Length: 316
Image (tube, rainbow, N blue to C red; front, side):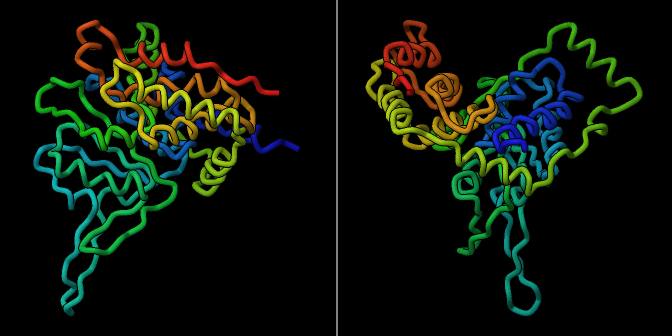
């Protein structure tokens, strides 16, 4: 009989086989995105326009049979476009009209072009899985995840996302330009056919929820928990960081460690899993001091130094 952890690995292969029909040569990025989705995390894709961020999100939605919603964020998008609004029904009662975020996989396209007020409309949904309109809370469908894209800071019409929002993303990922061979393959696969139309659903939503529950149940020993806490606490004492990891960041490291462990075919977390996810999970949340910036330090470099000096536990 196939074990539950092997079911996760088998399902991952099925999902990635579908997404690779559209996104070529980005296997590592696709694996990280899927790991975050399995950990019930949200993903921030930061890159120049045209590298396939939106297409990748839609490919995952199709492969996982998820209801897909998308809003192209511009300065004139209102919070009610995201959360929904209430309208009178003609009898004196107010009826809720769902916004774009009432779906399983919500693509917030070019989120950093929206106003701060509109960006904040996502905060409750990303943290609590619900939206509140006129004092009434409306739960979001399960599973639920946000994949947000943003153009690099400094591009026309962009602004920095607030720290409170950045902290709600499990990962920040960059797709990057494809290698010449992969770009040529991309052209060939689009001769007379849209490869997105060939992506089929390989899991039901309920099956994906079961996989998420399996990941959540992955065993964390006390020694590994202490290791995660020690690493995150060290970010708060690091002279090159103006502010260290939040408790939400600590929980995210734990959740991503569980997901990576399951992708490696284990139902328990080892220190190597924590080391693998520590930098990708926390780098985008860190704010460098002026001294760090003048010395040319990056958040990734400082986090790497923390990994190097923090002793990992030995599992028996």
